[in-house]
Image (cartoon, rainbow, N blue to C red; front, top):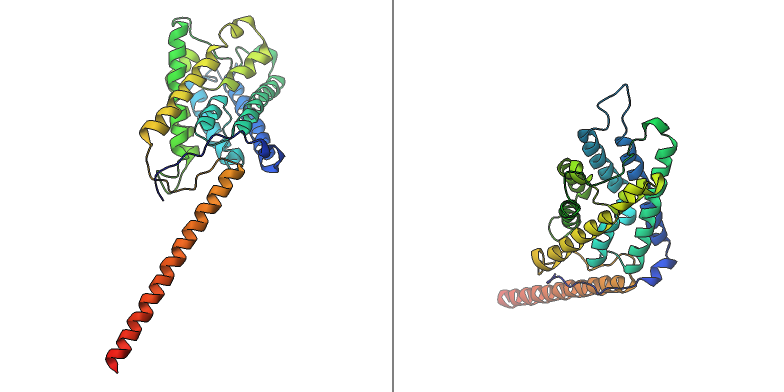
Length: 295
């Protein structure tokens, strides 16, 4: 259907009046709350089960949770549950600026709420670090920054590829993203906690409110946003620029994008109708020619 044409950036103010947007926002709150509730519980250690809280449990538990959230909430909001990936979707014109802003607020609120709920159901003597992420003492802050940037780069890149209808007829983002999260936690959990998500850092830091946590908190915003932005620009303007689009251009909930889809659909239907009429004319002419020969 032609070379990809990106829809222009839009504020998306009209979306605020639509029920679909608020369903998506609530979906982001609940989805991120589930993620943080699970994240905090996976890090606990219990005396009867000394192996609890190890890296294998954290990696598999987090990956499966992310995959389940995408399956459960993907139809509402794409199940972003991550401010860094929300930034990626804004840059890629997958969501409007207004929707992206509310998504980030919802993700932070859901993350804090999920962490608080997990805190309530956990005995005080079992809290430990309670899912709080931090840079390992054996590496520098800039090494930690680079690690989180690289991890989020891969996460954002795979997220974009997994929902790109131009690349494959059937997309399964829950499988692709869930498996990648498992691998990323295995890769970076010991160095930085493999956070890749400012909402995951924010939840335990707000609930526990310890000074040493806030000293490193900036890294878990700056690095994921940096990695996400770089991945999005590279994906859109280098690796897939000029790829033929098999889908309609769209920004979720945007009236202009909806009009563009309708206009494109109308052009396609007109082309099909014109081709059909030309075929009918040829068939009639062919039939008329045969009748003349027979006579």
